[in-house]
Length: 269
Image 1 (cartoon, rainbow, N blue to C red):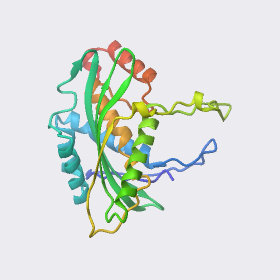
Image 2: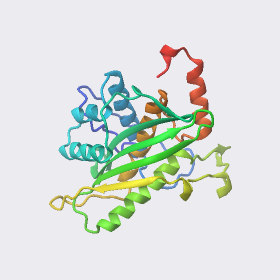
Image 3: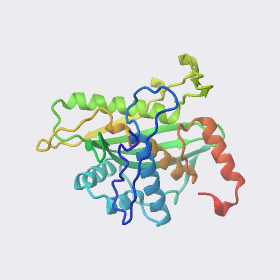
């Protein structure tokens, strides 16, 4: 199912989309987002890089190329809720007591079923974080998450699904990784497979757009999609380094920042 959400939501003048779906090498279980999460990570990392190269604000750049009016409205609403101030990514780096601070944004609509598929709910994230370059530790300080699910028959249930998506996505993006040896997982118990703790959860500000006139859309997985790229884009804003392979564990962060410091200044970014 590698074709899920494979079509970017942005109006690129030239596009070629292909999917080479192969069987998994190891037995896999279901996770929220399936292939839609890595596809969205690619879309939202790429558009963020384009905005930076164009010298434009990441939100404004996205709004110019989004084709769906509902996507535009949702992205604008989440940015306003987060108090987003327009500027180029990493144009005003801020360090406080050894911590680099940054913000990131990402948008997605989960598109599933047989290609070209059909859409579930729309979601957007704004992430504010800080990262400690010496330890590699990342602390998510604030999250604003917006969702357009059409008619919400049970708004409380939708909100609970959004929270579940957010918590699982944070854990997968910052900590979770399955290592293999000889085709078998190395992690056999929870002590060898770290997940996010309750004490590490940030404040989650959930905004549900009211659309009683629109058909209801699936909410079980859709909010997960923008999470990892929003965090990666915030890391770039904080450090000037692009992170392209989650999970962003302390070891991964330390290694990437050390490699960036060893390169000439003009090559960083």
